[in-house]
Length: 277
Image 1 (cartoon, one colour):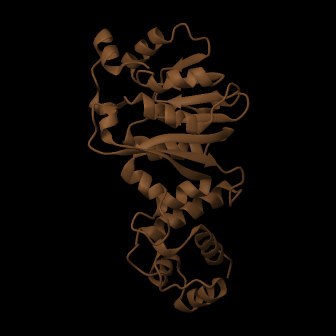
Image 2 (tube, one colour):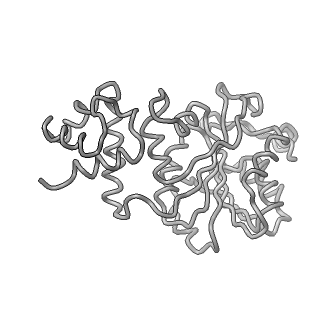
């Protein structure tokens, strides 16, 4: 395993709080995570935020090739030095959020995405990957525990919301590992979880415009989560009489709130509301 303290001293690396740098330092736990991903010798892995290469090292042992994207020039220098003899390692010094993902369109087979990124860009990166045209098998992320709770939440719980629906619309998210804060250097203020998002090959809406409207609809519903569905859905210019008919047709009680609906409920209500008069 790459020793973070040794690497830091060897290269005089300074952690950058502006980049949200917290590097994983538990080798046993890391092995368990990589085992759970079932990566094999035929797999192409896109790694976002390799840092010092603690995870990169294990991915290189298991996969066909690893393409790592790192924004920090200092970390890039270290990665080039540490993995200069690895023929299956490719390094890109760019900000992933600013990249054109067409760069990866010619990669063979299904891409496995693995990331340990600053928590404040988790949702934008997920959104970019979910909505891309890349042939992705799964996306696996280290995320803040509170965000993980929202992604994995069930209906009628306090954590259930638009992020839950968003994640489950594009994928089947699964918890891989709970990770206490003590397993990072520097130690963050929050615990983490590692989640695997198994990408759905078929989505509910094939039309991208309709898909965007649906996801916006879900966000608007949760923006007034303390109100019942009659009050929430009235913003879509439907009378109470119209809403009553939709409620009866779908067998959904509109006295409930958005947090009580599942994915199918949202989809069915959205379709009914958008039917021409």
